[in-house]
Image 1: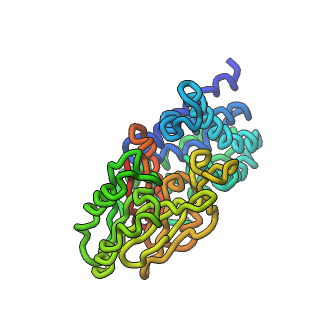
Image 2: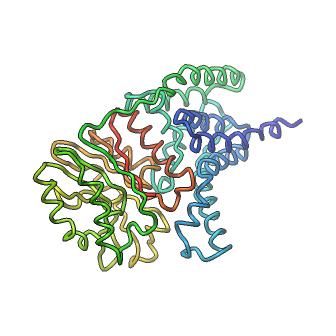
Image 3: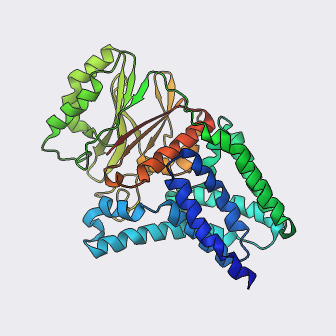
Length: 397
């Protein structure tokens, strides 16, 4: 049988690797993602390489069509039109991510490693990086905890080395990859997270209404949030999920007394809020208590649903490369709001500033019946583990 036909096993293997690595229950299974670049670049043809990469990205975001259909609602149309639009987003983003792998594939082993490296860079950075989830090197934190930038470089070098081995040594390449997996597996299975002294995150069950700009029940909603805050001990800080605070200027009077109490006990509560303008809005983290005010605005709002460049009146403002960290007292904080936790360049940009803490908030009411919230948390914990930085998460469901 033709060798290229025999190699088609790579396509379902890519799908399985993408699905298991990102949707698997145990965090250690994310290690499988490191096999993706080798599966793709060692393919015998460009078509097989491109289809294997496409299958990997489709598998990694398997739940996206269901979540998108809930998230967008009638924005993509109703009924079958909404379903078709959700699948189109899933397929379109996966195609965009697979294109660099297809374009950079080569049959010349001496160039294969460098092209693998270039493909990793292209899917991590804008413009493709705007949908750059499921980056294989995210798994580096599981196997090289605390190694930071050096660990990222070592893992990239190892993949380049394995991919560059000539066809006559493919068996050796597979053996070395399998041995490295077995060596690193015990490290990945030990799931220890660095503690975040004086910080805690609070998940909520506020559902769809969270984040609406026009709550009829705004007062009752704020009172419900206060029940999470009142037990907070002096000198401790709390993170609440994305957008649960509502419209910042509207809620400020409702928090005046609570904010004064928190300030007196030297505590800070950070919550997700919106700041609305005549044209569009910012999706932000704001503080009450000590250091009150807007601290961070999301760099990468979700494309299509939040960031709508064709309609500035309703679009969330992207802040792209601005303000990757902020100061809270003597701590440097790296904030990641929801969608940013899935991407690469916002995370790496924040780590250029040597943060002391990662605050990861999200609003997952639309995806609570999928693996997507767990994928976000898995990714951000892997990054924190790689750089030895504590992670505090807060999700609304």
